[in-house]
Length: 95
Length: 483
Image 1 (cartoon, rainbow over the protein chains, first blue to last red):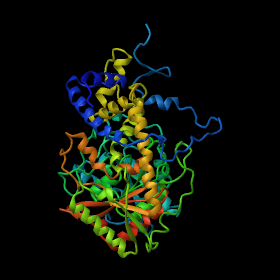
Image 2: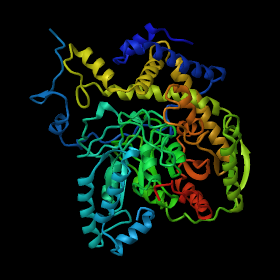
Image 3: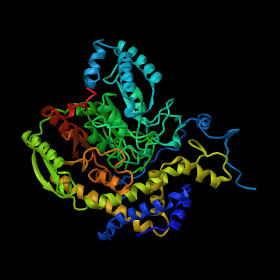
Image 4: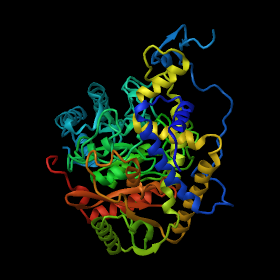
C-alpha cells in the first residue's frame, strides 16, 4: 500500500493541516510504511467480532439537565488570540 | 533529603526537621543545578513556595495528610490554573489553562506542593521525549541517551532525584517505558480509574494518568490521591477506591504468574530477557507459581494501536484551530488559511504524521478497512488478556525490548520508534492496569519488569511490586552524579 503525494495533500487539506511542500515525499513514504504495518491486520479473520470502541464497553452516563457550571466567558476569552465584545474574531467568512 | 521516601519526608516535616518551604527550596535548587537534563518545561518557583508556605501552616495546625508539604511535579499535560500548560507543543506555548485538571485539584487538596511542569513528547506522541517542542530530555543514567517517552521528563526527574515523585500519562506505554528506561517505578492504572478531566486528550479511549515514583510504596501514596470517580469525566468509573498502602506487605504465597510466550520471542535483547528471568526467580522464592501463557494476537497490537490512536488523535487535535486558544498564525488571508497555517506552523512532524494517518483511516472509503478492522482486532487482543488472566493472577514480561537508546538514534524512522512500545501497547487496548519496576542494569542502563494485572487490581500490583522491592535493591540504584 503506498500513498501518492497528491493523496497526502488531499488528506492534509481534510485535516486543515499545513505541511511544507518539501516534506510531502517524506510524509508519503512514512504513511505508506505505516499502512504496510496496518495491512498485517488483514491476515486475521474478524468476521463475527464486534468492534471494541472502549475498554469498558460502558454506556455514557446521563445526568439531570441542570446548570452546574457558572459562565466563565471572560476567563475563556482572556486566552483567545483575538476577541471583541465577547466574540471570537476570525477572518471574514461571508462577503 | 532528596534520597528520602515520601513517608520519610512526611515524618521529617512532622518532626520539624525541616519545613515544607525548606524542602521545596532544596528541590528547586536541585532542579536548577541539573537543568541541563531539560526535565522541566516550567519550573513554578514562586507558585511552589506559596503552596509550601500554606502547607507549613497546615502542618502546624495538624490538619495535614501524608502528602501535605511534599513537593511533586506534574507532567505538562495536566491543566494548571495560573501555570503554563504546553503539552510539549508550540501550539500551547502561550496557554494558561482557565481551570485545573481533576488530578491537580486532588494534589492541591492533599496539600502537595507543585514544583513545576515536566517535559514530554508533543501531545504525548512519542517514545523518546524527542518530539517535544522544548527539546529532548537527557536520561540521567547516560546523558547521551533518551529517557523514553512520552513521560520522559517525569521519569528523568525522579531518576535524578529532582522530585520525590511525579505524575505521568500512558496511552501506549508512556508511563511504563520511560519508567523502565530511567530505572523508576511507574503505574498505569485501569482505564477509568484516574480522572481524565483537564488531562489534555491524545487518544481518549486509551489515555490514563498515573503515578511515577522511586518505589511502589511511594507510588501507592500518589495513587491514593489520584484514584476516584469524577463526574467531570464521562468515562470515569464509579467504583470504591481501596487503600493502596494497606496490603503492600501481603504474602505472595501461591501467586500465579503467567509469562506470555509472545513477550519472550525474537527481538528481545538477551540481557534483558536474563534480567526478567532473574526477577521471575525472585518471585518464585517469594512463593509464586509460574506458567507459560499465550496472547496469540499480540503481534497485531501495534497496527491496531496506530490506527485507533491516530484516529482518535486526529479528532481530538481538531480543537486546535487558532480561534479560541493556543497559537494563531500571522495575517491569515481567510478562515481556511487561518486553520491550515496555524496548525501547520505549530504542530511538529510526529503530531502531523499521526493527524494525517488518523484522517486517512477515518476518511470515506477507508473507515471500515482500517478503523473498524482495528476495533475488531482490539477486541481479540482484549479477549486474549481475559483468557490469560483467567488462568493466572498477573502477567510478567519486559517493558521495552531494549534499554535506553541514543538521542537521535531512532528519529529518522517512525516505525522503528513505534516498535519500542511493542510490549506495552496491548495493555492500553485492553484498558488493563500495569506496572514497570526496576529489575536490573545492563551496561549500567536500567531494565524494567512489566507486571500486568486484571481490571482494578492496582492494589495487588502495588503489593506484588513492593514485595519484590523488599528483597531487591534495583529501585534504590541511583545514576552516577545524582546520588
